[in-house]
Amino acid sequence: MQLDEIKISKAIIESYSRKLIEALDVDVAIVGAGPAGMVCGYYLAKAGKKVVLFERKLSVGGGMWGGGIMFNEIVVQDKAKGILDEFGIKSRRYEAGYYLADSIESVSTICSKAVKAGLKIFNLMSVEDVMVRSRKVVGLVLNWTAVEMANLHVDPITMRAKVVVDATGHPAEVARIIERKSGIRLKTKTGKTLGEGSMWAEVGEETIVQNSKEVCSGLYACGMCANAVFGGPRMGPIFGGMLLAGKKVAKDLIKKL
Image 1: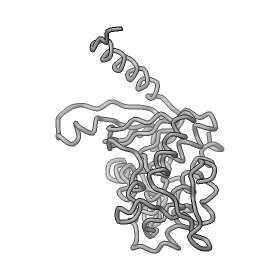
Image 2 (image 1 turned 45 degrees about the vertical axis):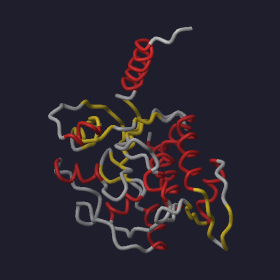
Image 3 (image 1 turned 90 degrees about the vertical axis):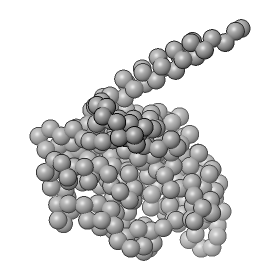
Image 4 (image 1 turned 180 degrees about the horizontal axis):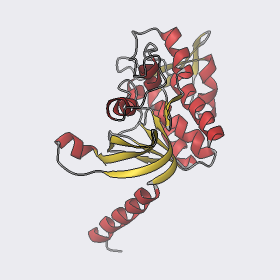
């Protein structure tokens, strides 16, 4: 068989176009493919929800790839080890309460299991705005990351979701767009994003799960984004809270939807 370059190109364009059209009206749209966002997407998809995830970068995984200072090992605590076990990620006990896992295996396995469960991931796509109707977040405004980086004057497209999840990590990008542009008061002490505090792993790991909740009508925060919105400390290269936060938001949304 002779390979035809035009057929190869048509296959990619036709398949991707169908996938993108299907993603324009969903139950849940997640922004950010770090561990919290992908775990959230995994449990939602596993429960039969129509869920898509948009990631600005070429690769998924957020900061998990690099472990701590580019030493590609991650630490999780007792509470989160069960999620590693569920995904089939090998872990080993360091000492009481501390477990180590390979960051490369962790990211690649979480991504693979989430996609196989039904999560649709779109990389190289940025969220530049949100759609708000009657003071509720009802969708996202999307453009290619390359357009954003080149600062090109190219109009975006839109998609609709029953719920949006901000899993953009430290920047809390979706919450800040809403704060800046919509006039909606967030469910924080000040009505605005509070910003994250200095590193304190013990408190940060607890609050990241507690703070992964509704930010305003139609928007949830998940993972490190939650502490950036509600004012918890950062926690450094321990990732149990990220995994637990993703699972918590998914469980909340499964009940809500």
